[in-house]
Image (cartoon, rainbow, N blue to C red; front, side, top):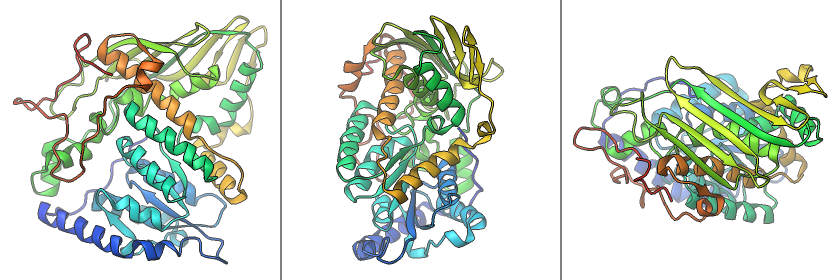
Length: 445
């Protein structure tokens, strides 16, 4: 997981910010439908790409798409913020001069900008904060586009159900869908898990996975307001500091730890039936750290009775590990190190170990698009996202949560409307601190 800082842009007033986004959105709405007809025009084998969400991961995904061997051109971009879009465009142009052709008319800003950018493309990258993913995925499927969407694909069960429904519609339209769980495209992981599925360590009876590391970026309100020369609305502040709010991120168990949980689901060829756990905020406290926990520990149970011990932690000067391991009746496997111990000891050794999985996942998706081969990672991406959401439900509530309870949850974390003056559902108290879940009191379903 990498969230590079973006260069600062010149300060601009809130009035000019709102006027700029409204003007561009309006212009796009006028011309969107007619321009849509030009996407992948007859006789032109160039695949037209749109980037929705121009932050660090979105820019990285666009870079990887443009780095494939296929004839691709980035022709549209959309983001909530002009500085994000312009910084991303500048970086992509510097690296892919001949593959980036985003005119001023095709730079879309605001909450509805995604619709116009999607309309111009054959393939779209969805890389906004995860809370918006179900909305954007539905629209891209509705418009009949091939899609790469970053993980996680939702932040609550309401969003998961929307993604699963849209995934079925995508299959009916023969759309190709990639999800940014790149370990699934990493040769050492693929070979290691194939051996586990072939029984090289016998029946798998226990698993564990960790994402214990340091706190990622944070954008303090005071620094943001100094940078932009004005006060931010609460909506804009939360979006610029999105990692720390559940409606945007889903907590770091969802945004980061999903990678490790997805590996365990892959090993088990299934999803957990229940979860119980604990977590809280011990170290990372302050007005700019929102409502998420700084540690989670979850025990997931699978249908065969085996259990996975899961940890994720954002605490400085503590033991770090991003890894997965399993124990079987005939041996054990350090999955992230591609090593089997026991009577069938083995270690992956190949130059393929050097393959960049972030690049490989795009190579695989674009090959499927060009060759029109079946390709859909949406369902498993949604269910691994649901695994992490279920874990959060367990740590926030302090209760055992079953898969059925989690999947049927009616808790909707998203705002009812999206404007810069919308009041989010979670607000700071008089002391400036945001409320965090309290196990035993918080209802997480």
